[in-house]
Image (cartoon, rainbow, N blue to C red; front, top):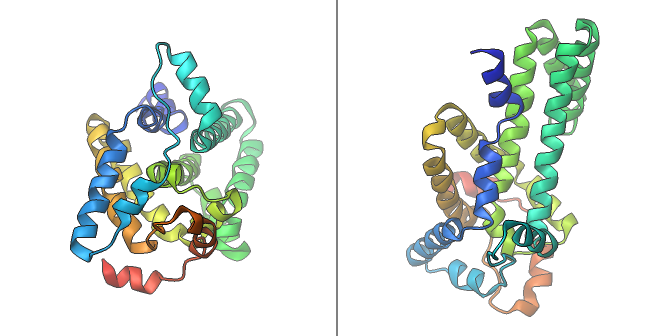
Length: 255
């Protein structure tokens, strides 16, 4: 793999951004999500799809020019703003790693990558395991550190992208949304990682894989969430209780 291809595959891969960006302007992904919810409702006698459909959508209709559509979407959709912010931060981080490797002395770039890796995994693995992981990566070629970091952030970004149909209608407060993700981080990240690697390695069918991921997320939502209330007035209370999840054992048993 030449340096140009390597850069656009690992540092500045636009495939995931384009797939998710397009989903804000196209309703097919949401329809796949609802279709799976409806299927699970028929199997389990639940009301996920019915109650979900009652919630207001924060998507916008496509206007004559893309600029107006983009502005309206950015102003109206919180999920779109979070999406743009996430990818901006990740691309800036990746460019920082690229510049440090190619324009700084080896020791300086190694220290920068080690610091980024440690800060990335500190709240996930703890101090000891984060330090151990960084120590191992420091002994290997810099390529492995890049692969670990870009894969982690890419997979987590994709995992949140797959939840856009859910969060677009189920509008948690930002703190509740963060807590919702943190209590389900293992499950959500695992899903994102599988599809991230698949799309990264088989880009020719990336659209099919992404659609399949959205469809399957409809099933997974029914396994680690409870039904949305049919009365919108109950959403505030439900959101508070739903933001915390301790059903990991039950989730594994349902697979």
